[in-house]
Length: 431
Ligand SMILES: Cc1cc2nc3c(=O)[nH]c(=O)nc-3n(C[C@H](O)[C@H](O)[C@H](O)COP(=O)(O)OP(=O)(O)OC[C@H]3O[C@@H](n4cnc5c(N)ncnc54)[C@H](O)[C@@H]3O)c2cc1C
Image (cartoon, rainbow, N blue to C red; front, side):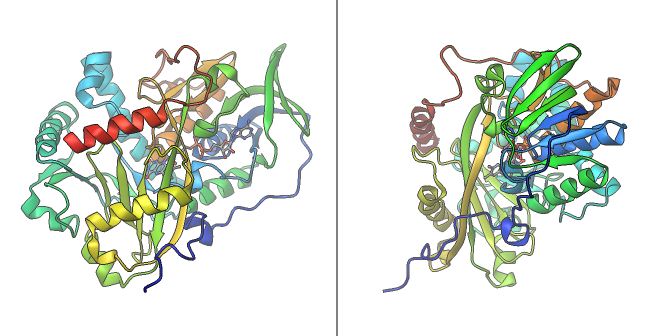
């Protein structure tokens, strides 16, 4: 009998092999700083870098190790359309002008990321290799066609409809009924990007205090007292970038964020020619299912990374790995004997209106709710937070002034996810 491909799987991110998490010696907490940031992911570090470049003193507090959250764990897909609402529904909700403005900020976020990498000289294997959105049912190709027309006419977006007979250019599988190719999307090495950002923040004079959870924030005169188990700091301004890891530090924030687990598996190294055949352009692949899958080749073109949000009741990576592998085999049965070397997960931040949010609660800035598409958007909104610290009018966004909804009785425990998952599975099966 052959060995189970999941025997010997390491349950930690593949990316951490090259960029392991490191906890520093506990640092003393300074008495004061212009800016305190909660969370050391892309949101927090991007805010920190912009504030530092504008001359502020900045301290970043991180409960675990720097980059412990989604920013060093994600799939590295970089998308111009990072919203979970369809464009049509965004128009119904916000009207044509605001919807257009908002969706153009998706493009702006990717342009900002690209410019930041260039300006800060961060090498993170970013390539605009595109994204293939596979139609999992024939009627979904009609949906993708209609959406492509709207994206093209309203936003001038570069999207192409790919008939099933042509899709081998984007995926070496006949699993989908055709799809849409988002020409300007891309992929990045997420942990390498995080590491680059972290180094730039440190070099610019930012102080990273890891292993230190912020437990409360209270206004005192013109300042905010940032309390931790290891001491208190006075900050002129505070920004929270905790997204799916948001805890009780700001109760009005935790009851607006829905933490959702997302997981990824990585295969063992495969022959480069095989990976090239399975994903010929090295693009990201997602599909039209509500229980979405996202997958790509690793940055070195040697492995397949298959991610998804199975919304399993018990959302550990060890539970999700067999589910993700089964899906991978539906797409590529030839990987039956391929070993799974890594499986891991992390937490996304969802919101009740399916939009990201940036704003201020009780005098504290925040940006969050990237709905699984935050690589570019969190970096962009983090930058906007930094501009807010500098009172720069360029801090404005199409998300300003938007109501940030919660649900009665919700306080951060998403008890309803397994019901949503069951509903999604039924809808996916119907089409
Ligand atoms: C498995 C997975 C796959 C994904 N794939 C993609 C993808 O392909 N494309 C894409 O665009 N997006 C993807 N995402 C989403 C993307 O990674 C996130 O949107 C983005 O990283 C959010 O960054 P952040 O800085 O806001 O939060 P995070 O990176 O999650 O950082 C939040 C940090 O805050 C810290 N924290 C929380 N509370 C406190 C406190 N009280 N005190 C101190 N520190 C605190 C946490 O420890 C954590 O380190 C994925 C996410 C996951 C988990």
